[in-house]
Amino acid sequence: MATDNPGQATFLELFFDLVYVFALTRISARAFEDLAVDEGTAHGWSAVTGGGKTLLLLLGLWSVWQGTAWVTSRYDPRHAGVQSIIITALVASMVMGVAIPRAFTATGLMFASAYVIAQVSRPLILLVALGPHRYRRLKLRMTIVFAATGVLWITGALLPTNPKVVLWTAALSVEYLAARFGWPVPGLGRSTISRWDIAGEHLADRYQQFFLVALGETILVAGLAYSTGPYAEGHPAAFALALATSILLWRIYIQRAGQILGEAVGKARHPANIGRSAADTHLVMVVGLTAVAIGYELVISHPMEHPPVAWLAMVIGGPVLFLAGRARFEFEVFGRVSPSRWIAVLVLLAATPLLVHAAALVASTTAVVVLAAVAVADARRAHGRPPEAAAPPF
Image 1: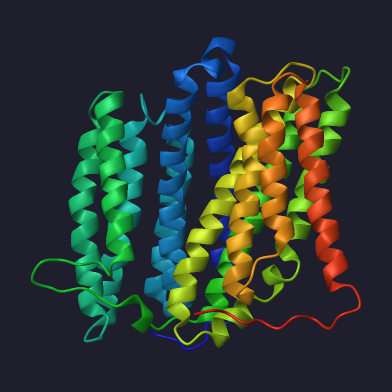
Image 2: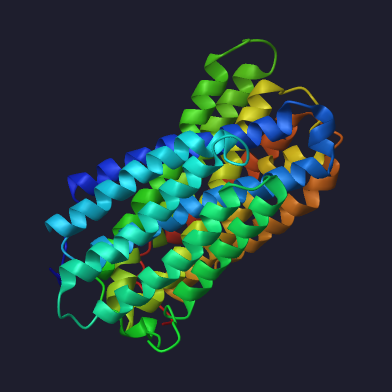
């Protein structure tokens, strides 16, 4: 069942990714409702709590996708057992996406049940399929952890909103910490992540593919927001800026580190360590892209309005998060960070207090100009030089 080189992602894996285009649009739609339905809400504490709840749902989606990606990078994705894991995760993710808009009210049990099924079934299927394998004890510990946190997920789904948020946050925290520390279970020990065998290039490709999914979601949101009209003053410009932003985000990601993550993982002494680090990095960038998509919808819908702070958190905070994640990504691949990354972050943060007094279209324009400057700096640094080789600090 194990494989040294799964090669490129299978058709089923790419099919699985398509579900996340839909799921991420539901995340954006839910956040947009919190920020745009009531102007008073956008200025108040509800915007913060709503954003926190939306982030919780996004982290749940990411956990299911990431767990599945690691399975296909450690075991043969063409094996029937692994394919059953992917299909189960696909169906569960689709159900979670459908439940997202009302996950803290009417569809909480739907979201929690789908999440628990995806998380528990994955190690359980591997536990049965692996037989006498050295990773069998690890899968047993993972099953125990997800079964225990599953109680919190299901119990929380049956409670009102505030206790639901508390229990779901606790469950997700336990799962993330357990993964970080090798899935420790009393009496069964824990694992050292650096000793895990993975096909590094396959895992790198999977993270790059998910980044493209998140980037595609930004384009989809921009197109849907603009297609509903009205095509009045500022709307075409807001749409054009949204497309320009997506193109610049792609350009910054792919230049050069985004092209050779697989090479960096292959050069690392412990590929699982850089794989875990890349997971965190891509999570930050995906959260940034999700915020960017929400910003698109807000600016396209209200291009000439003065943006509340909560709106600027999306329009400006999204690119800031992306650049922060991209800076760490560059360090993972090359062991250094280009000055343009942190300079751009500082410029965006410094401009934020001034943008409160300008139209939302101005904030979007500022983000585009700063991102364009980063892309130009990248191009100038690479011009006339041989392609830089990966030099991971792991």
